[in-house]
Structure formats: C-alpha cells, structure tokens
Image 1 (cartoon, helix red, strand yellow):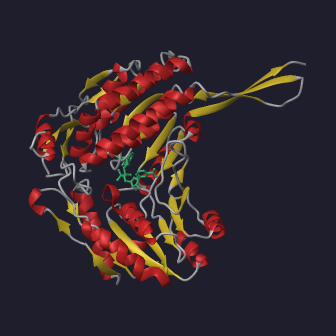
Image 2 (cartoon, protein in one colour; image 1 turned 90 degrees about the horizontal axis):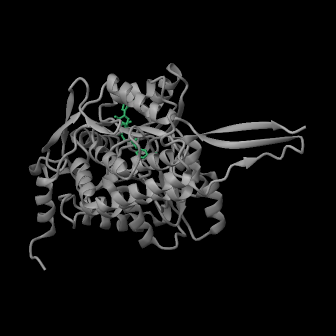
Image 3 (tube, protein in one colour; image 1 turned 180 degrees about the vertical axis):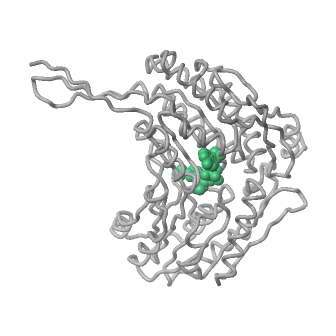
Length: 499
Ligand code: NAD
C-alpha cells in the first residue's frame, strides 16, 4: 500500500483536472456569443479554476430554440418510454463511471468534502436519473368512469421546454432532481447552474449526449442570475421553470412568469426548519448526533437544515451539552482530504453573510456557546467554525432568517403546543422533526407542523421514493418521487363520443 496520504492524490489530481468552461447548446460546447466569461474561483483556497462562459439573453435564445426544435421534431419526446429509459440508464452509468472526476469538480467548485462529493453527491445524482428512467415505462394513464356513451382518456404529455435554474449547495443533485423526471417524461431542458457552481452541470451535458440523448434535448447555460436566469425565466418559448434557490429569487420567478407567458413555475426555496426534542426523547445521544449533522452537514448549506433546535426545558442542559461536545470536535478542514467532514463555504460573500448573522446573534443577546469565527484564513479559502447559540428568542434574526451556514439557534419550550407554535412561527415550511417516545404526540405534532417533510425520531432521512419540497414560502411542487412527474407533464382529456 502506498504511504502517500490520500489527500496528496486528490491535490495532485486537482492540478490536472480539466475545467469545463463552455456552454452546451445543440449538442456542442460553445462560448457565449458575446465572448463574455466569469471567473470560477475555488472556495478551498481562493484559486482561479478557470473562465466560464457567461451566457446572455442571445445565448438563452439559441438554447431555447434548440430545445424547442428538438421537442417539436420528436427526436426525444416521441421516443417510446422504454427507449428513453435505455438512454437515461446509460447516462446514469456514465455519471457513475466518471464519479471521481465529477466529485473532484464538485469539491473544487463549492468546497464540500471530497468524501461527501464521492459518496453522496455523485451516487445520489446517478441513482436519481436511473430511478426516473426505470419509472417512466411503468406509468399508465387513465380512463375516466364516464359511462357507456363516451371514452374519456386522461393522458399525460410532456410540457415542452423546461428551464431548470439551480443553486450551488448540491449542484449535481439539484440538477439531477430536475433532469431525471423532466427528461424521462420527454421534455427538452435548458439547465442554468449557479454561477458559483457551474462545472459539473457543464461536464454531464457531454455524458448525456454520449449516452444517446439527441442533440438539443439538454442544453446547459452557465451564467449569472441576471441576465442568464432572468432571460430564461422571461422567455416566451419556455413552458415551465423548475427553480431551486432562495425565496427572494423564487418570488422573482413568479413575476417573470406573469410578465411573460404565464409559464408553469415550480419553486424549491429556503427553510428555517425546527428540530423539536421532547423530554421523553427515546435516545438523547442519537438526537444530539442528528441535531449536529442536521446543521453541520454540508457546512450547513442545506435548505432542509435543522437550523432551529427546540428543546423541552427539562432536558435542555443535557441535550445541549451533547450537541456542543460534537460541535467542538468538528473543525473545518481541507476539502480535498478524505478525512475532512466539514469543508469551505461556497465563497467570500456567503462567508461574510454567515459571519454577519453570527454577529447579529451576539448583538441581539443570544449566548454563543461554541464557534463563531472564521478559520483557516491562511489558506485563502472561506471557512467558518461550527457555531451554536443558546437562549435564542423567537424574535431574533438568527431564529427567523435562513443563514445557510453552520449556525445553530437553540430555543426552549414548555409543552408540545408551544413547540408547534414556535416551530411554525417562520415564513418557511420546508422540514421539521419531532423526537418523542409518545407515538400519539408524534402523530399529532407531525399533523400540526406546517412543513413538507416531518421526521420522527430522525432528521433528514431521505430516499428518492419520497417527495421533497415545502409549504408556505419554502415553495411549491415537489422534487423526487413519482409526484415530480406532475411538474413536467400536462394532463390532457380526450373525449370520444360513443353514443
Ligand atoms: P439564489 O436564489 O441566489 O440562486 C439560485 C439560482 O437562481 C442560481 O442559478 C442563480 O444564478 C439564479 N438567479 C439568481 N437571481 C436570478 C434572477 N434575478 N433571475 C433568474 N435567476 C436568478 O440561491 P442560491 O444562493 O444559489 O441557493 C441557496 C438557496 O437555495 C437557499 O435559500 C436554499 O434554501 C435554497 N435551496 C432550496 C432547496 C429545496 O429543495 N427547497 C434545495 C437547495 C437549496
């Protein structure tokens, strides 16, 4: 066995990996028509990874025209489900075959630990594409029970050209959650990755074509939110926007649809999810460990992060000590070191935002129990310690706003009713958790919590078979599961008179 540390391998490979920097339109890599680019900076050490095409409105026009042509001539939309399945299964296989390259690009681009990119992001993305591929030739349409004088068929049709706009926290997974069901259903897609994380989206476009996806069916447009995302969302020939990102930008998507062609808009937006631990929690060690990973996994850059820990008064000290003990063992490290479990925040702006919230927690009177600082400054990267606040009140900014970083706000409650009231007292409704031995209380609270996902005696339990998405200002529509097909298909009634 080599005595060379594994991180040295990833470091060496990082120096050699080819950085994809062009848009992908009509089956070919191209520069932006204007020649504009933006810098792709690694948050690991602030190094310049490369220049990436900065798509503008004219590039959006080309990509949408190519997607429209592909859709209308039926090269993909009219293939049988079984044949689309074959192509998408090959696409998933190619993602797996390029796992190390994709994981390295993801880690360099967003600073998440290489072990997570390799073991979570890439396999989950491949599994997602494969799951929708497998599903699509098992879906039947409906015949309505109209009586003998008619045959009324209710069929699903692909919606047409889908604009997918995704964020940077799980670039490949978020893209796959859109691409899997949208492509399987027969649509053409124009994918706009975040300007903070364009690399894997650009790279997989070629893998999709290698798998047999016809040219024009998947186009990838790297670029800034405005103009690239805005032009896509305002485009008169885009039938649907599937968006994941912040609530502020999600609201803009609704406006753009209203200002243009009333395209369908599906939103997966922010969260401020309550993780509620009752005094009769069956296992405080497990609850503490889940509470820590609910906020520190992926550096807290998780829409479903359990960012508010609500603890029943009588167990507050015991639980909090356990969470603090875990938080103090977690130090941000080099994302290219396989032993690292906490990496860099995505960029300087996000780090300043997180540090700003930490400052606001302090100044509003919350008690900082651990963390709170930037670390590893010497690297040139953007790292923040796992941070835990205690004695947070429901009116503080750190209790109400999404921080999107490794910052936990701890609050206490007297009884289940107060826990539910506090839990629901934010604009978001993405996820929630309840820890209790009492099955009746668990069900009652799960029903009262206004959230798209409620976990009982666990946090962030996940599978492609279940829907993901939120109530309230966390969005509309669902990613994952068979329900995701609803976003990418139109229902048609065909009534045949038999009288
Ligand atoms: P963001 O809203 O800043 O950007 C998301 C995407 O929208 C990016 O591709 C960006 O370029 C684009 N965009 C920005 N401004 C735009 C505009 N005016 N017009 C069109 N497009 C525009 O969000 P972010 O910082 O990239 O991601 C973090 C957010 O994503 C958090 O709020 C997080 O909770 C949310 N998120 C939600 C889910 C979910 O499933 N609910 C999953 C992951 C992340």
